Image 1 (cartoon, one colour):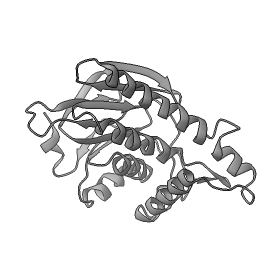
Image 2 (cartoon, one colour):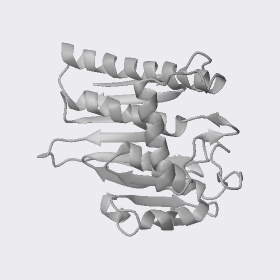
Image 3 (cartoon, rainbow, N blue to C red):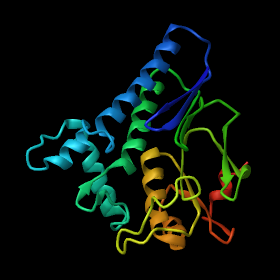
Length: 245
């Protein structure tokens, strides 16, 4: 069974390979409802969200347990990325760069309680699961940022996560936090790993570093990456090809 809905201003696709029964329908409903709640709670574009209220009254707002956890994770990754992952913008807090992958990770756990064979994609970030004895991996295409209908690489993955940062769809939204310059090169940076939070945050941070980001990712354990630059040159980390079908 497969469904796609627009939530958080982006397409969310869930596919679970299982016969249709009441539990399956309930799981789909639970997952999509969860993303709706996350959007309501943490969108900086909703004036009633916790993020908006925090920015409006930073000294008088009591953080919820969930928001406290999100901000803690953001702080940890700010340190791990030497400040390239940043949630403070012009005096305002915007953890959107983590909220999406945090929500995907939580939804993954919900689905995993009952099913082993599924695919969840939220705005281009993906988690997949296959049974241990499965011989057929999920296949995930990396889009050519210059020709949207072309796939440049196909990643084969049984269990894990794929996250892509890029400027070819949502332009001018990632910048170097140290000089404020919008990143125009690379154009696309895909990271493969086990944790969707890790892959998503590290893809964002590496993208903010410019072309040097791929070299930084090269030295991180458990992550592989594929970068496409503005001149259409592609660079990959040492073991990325192990994921390519």
